[in-house]
Image 1 (cartoon, rainbow, N blue to C red):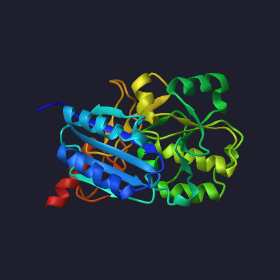
Image 2: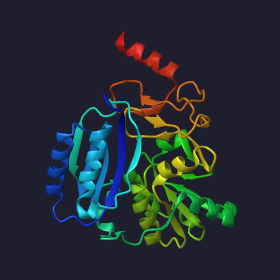
Image 3: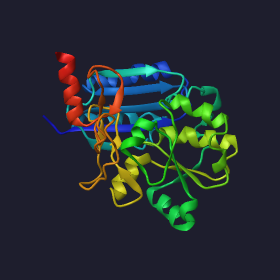
Image 4: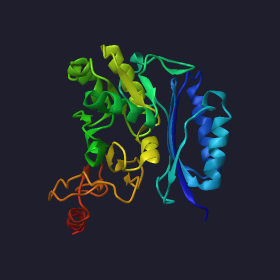
Length: 289
């Protein structure tokens, strides 16, 4: 068996026929025995798929052969071979569910009115120049941020991406309007939308980390401004960028430091929490009795 790999990418671009893209992506993935999750909308595509390395490489080549996806920024990571239980390709109103597709404008260059893109080096340079005035704004949910985040980041009290808009509209973050705000998320797709929403709210100095935490971690590991582990949306649950990653998470049951995230107390449920392996084992034994 070849080396298992996972690719993560998104593209904001106007798509005239999302259903045709769904059928095409399904056929390609099935022919290459790939599994994962792909969301298509009229505004683009958001995909995380995995499989054997030669098959994943071919998938990327085929996907990039479609002109709107030609410049897709594809992030690669090691897989385990059983990272996704199945293939899911769906058409949705949004490729990332903020719950307000009417507030997003997309043209052939991507999201209209988003923040200034910053490379990982650019983020470090901004912090070097502006110091503590820079605000890191986490575009993920509070669970993801529990095990890893940029130092001093603002972490919104949200369980899902849909929870951001009511907080923004209510002025929850208006005190940050005149400071440089750097939005970030796993691979970049959520902060693309979030930066546009903040600018629409009147934030004057908004940036977005291009390529997300993944690109920053690839370049700086745990020797930059990022701290902890990165939550990922597959069976791995989290990844580290080095052998000296900080452990920021705290077990919800006993309080010991841990980066472990799992369904708790029901291992087959949907309630993800930060829980240490020992507490998780105790819960699983109780369920099976």
